Image (cartoon, rainbow, N blue to C red; front, side):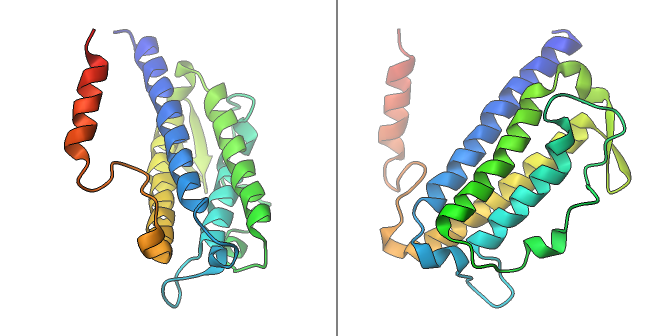
Length: 186
């Protein structure tokens, strides 16, 4: 496999996986009742609202300048970003928070879709630190996935027995595996 092919395979897989991470977060957030957007599990914890604000702020800062393709000299910490404000609890409604969520993911996914395999070895800066685009993407995979799993944990805890699983239900692994194997047969 040539480098270009490997880069395209990586980007294709990353696009699919991160859209899956977004869908996982949405599956959790859809289960929130209006006042639960601002609920925390312990003092100093983050609510779903704060987590959504932070993810969106990060996505806008890191990827906004790359929405239409790679541009040299970009810093992923935009001067206009107020990161500390992302962690302040606001009064937004669920609908407003959905719009913030969607806006952040739109910026990030458009930037991801605009990247080419040749861009992976190019550089950009995050808070003055040089990264290859590949390194910056890997950094964000860990960051965004981590926060989405925090959302899943938060909402699952808030919903308790009313939680609707987002993966294979307990006790259903064998049936799921059998169905998957059946689908793979000619």
